[in-house]
Image 1: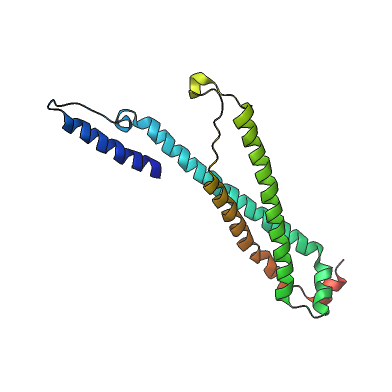
Image 2: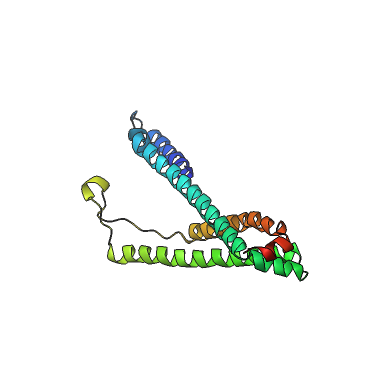
Length: 183
């Protein structure tokens, strides 16, 4: 947890400064030294967030590959006809790659719209409540970190776009004669 190490260094510096300011030997402890289990728990939460983001990226990638494979299989006859008319594999792969990227973009727009809508509802109307005795807050806090949101969106788009090259290889293995007969 990068924030914890920064905070810990600052706390240690302040702790040393407080000890050095007086002639009396003080027994000072930082909050991290006093309650290490809380900070261990926060570090565990950061690990969970990273695992969840990785799993989401894997699921999104598999979904995009599956969607593109289904599009290719549905259009096998069209691919055969285009190959018979002289279209090369690279051009056909480009068509499916662009179509897949449009699907990724549309999915990101819809997903971000839904996510931002929920976040704005929570921020303004506090629709998700928490037990204040357990969580020390009465509702789920919402914080917009635009750089992180942009980074996640760009990262998801790039990973899914790279993964789209795999099904595109399938296009080069389709034979025109078999594809035109295929029904």
